[in-house]
Length: 202
Image 1: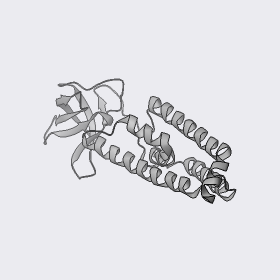
Image 2 (image 1 turned 180 degrees about the vertical axis):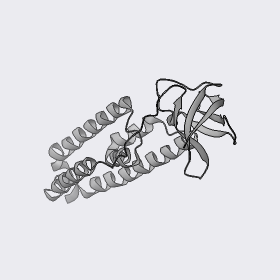
Image 3 (image 1 turned 120 degrees about the vertical axis):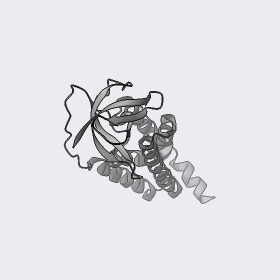
Image 4 (image 1 turned 90 degrees about the vertical axis):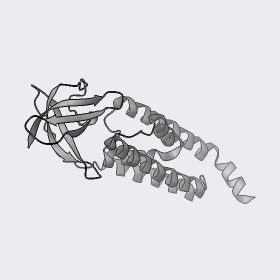
């Protein structure tokens, strides 16, 4: 059910505030990410409509916020895409092939797994902080994790957590980190294979 209310408190720097329903009820928390029109920023006194939901901690918050006179954008339910899994399976297959050909040591594969897991958890924590209106993990830190080998975990987080999956500027940098990482891995695999073999024989 849609509810009409007025924004009575707003902190634009932090991107959240509170809505007072027009008819009755207590004020409701609202985060800027709940606003459908991303080209506008809420201001105090503005009339909006919204649906009532809850965050991960069970606290009431506003969802699908629209400004007065705007239509609600109904988003079709999206299922998680399978293409990230195909990309990851192909990447894992290449890593295992390089290992079988003695081009890549096992600890490199293990490093990818550990860093990817840490990156996925970082995305999950950042999304929770965003919903709670708390201090976020800097985007530069997330991109650095992708650069050093955590991009498989980041790809899964973007697809299945739906976090950082719409911001074009972020995605452009992300895919650049993937290309740089893969280029470095290719050099280590094909040019540095002999170094790995020599190290293993010592």
